[in-house]
Amino acid sequence: MKNVTKNQVHLSELTEDQKTKLTNQELAEIQKYNKAAADEQLKKYLSHPGHKMPVTRRGFLAAGIGNFAAYMTAPTIADMLFNAGIAHGQTLDCPKPVAGSAIPGILTINPTGGQGIQGIVVPLDKNQQKLASYSQHSMGTNPNTLQAFGALWNNDNPASGTFINQLNTAGITAANCKVVGIACRTGSDSDNNPNGIEGMATKAKFVGTLLPNLGRRNSVTGGGYLSANGNPPAPLVVNSFTNIRNALSIQGALAGMSVQQKEALLSTIGKFNERQIASLGSLNGVETLNKVLQCAGIQNIQINRQGSGGIDPVGNAAVAGIWGLNANSQLNSETYILGAMAFNAFSGQSGTSTFTKGGYDYHGNALANTRNQDITIMDYCAKAVRTAAALQRPAVILLRTDGSVSSNNSTTPSDWQGDRDDGMHLMILYSPSGVNVTKAQIGAFTTGQSVDLTVGAGDNQDRLAKIIMANILKFAGKSADINLITGLTPTDVNIIVA
Image 1 (cartoon, rainbow, N blue to C red):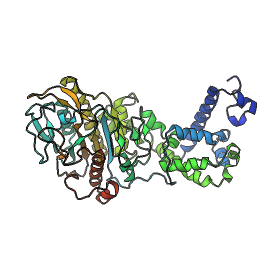
Image 2: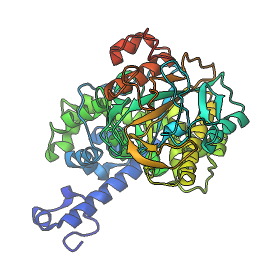
Image 3: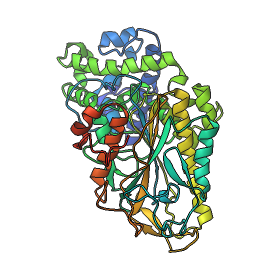
Image 4: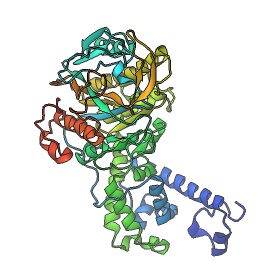
């Protein structure tokens, strides 16, 4: 940097003349250096038991971070938070998940483009019986079927066997795992379907002890759809396990704060300027800032004590074996990312997790190719169930896509041909203490092989999300909250089957 010496790495050490001559690139380099150096020193400090986040100049000096007072300046922290995509909240409380191991973790597997899920699990009518024909669902007139884990499977599609055989081999039985089909009409090839349960899950306090919601996309849900009935806090976007690990560093902890914590921090930051940093301890807002930063500091101490096994699936031998992971695995691989999402969601360390995978627009694609795609997704679903079983924790795995696809009328299995809104979602429930469901399918299909709009969710996507959330609450033993969270009647056996 031509206008700045190597020792002048903080804006407070520069003359006014030097500041005015800084280029944007030089300013960015200074800020980057400040953050990296301060983060490293703070991580070392917080790794020792009993150390909390310092909030006064004396505290920073005691932590050996006296030279990094600029770390506490409003622009630095605000930049971190705004880059993390903040939605403002109203209170100062740290995230408080529902107590008890009976609360299930929620993982959504979201193939985008309109996967023909109804070509894997066979659609039923409103009497829970087979249709006269499945010629529009790539199964021909009379497909070979198999009853397993509470659902009726298309035995001609090898993806069914991928799921069933993997669970059977792992010793997981129907007593502990059930698969429920959900007949629904959603917009094909669209990221704007407002049928996510993430907002309601947050309202019901299905949140993580260490991590926020996890997702693959920079969207309100972390997936290729919108949230119904209220938005959750912005998720942590995971393109590599490194994103999850960094979320528990100092900068990551700030970015991963709850909505309420971010609001409190921004409110406090707005009360002081650069000159006030030197006398930070005298500010009226210090107690507020102290409370918020202690939340982040305590979380970092917890994770440092736990070691990498706390959030890393490789740290759990059983889970690592399920996903084929080891110390040399690529941190940005699909299996590492999804394995980490499942591990943290089911262990209660993260909120809802959403794994989005592209390439599932089936129309005009050969049946052999689309069935290979089905195999991949059902393999992921099976591995997720096995992860919950290895952790001995209850879990909900939602398989959901945007819209669907149809095949030509054929008496035998045929290629998917055109986009269609009528399709199927799956809700997979696992619990080590047992799972009971009253129906194999929520909603129904007509004899014309389209979604029956008179039962279940029909084409009401808000209702679809509420039905799914109501079943999750029932499964979690929280029936008393169903009406409060979803507005649905807890005793409606037509839509609440868990």
